[in-house]
Image (cartoon, rainbow, N blue to C red; front, side, top):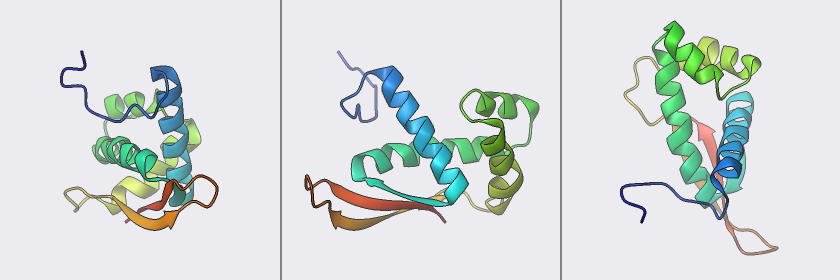
Length: 115
């Protein structure tokens, strides 16, 4: 029974789902925006905003916790370039823009970008 477990399962086992969100977060932080499906973007928005909030508080504990998920290059960019831009912002660091359905299978595509 899934009591109070929130989030979309994305039709994957937990290990694959975590790896997918890690890869999407890495691409988002490196490129600033990515194109993906709506379901993946909604899950990525939750994960990436928590990472940015944690990176805003510059403590060694937060760097180590983020380092468990992100590579050193992405971690450096997140803590040194991305997080300082959002110091005065309370939340809502990402934006989802709908694009319409994908031709091949009709999945709703979106662009998720850093504000």
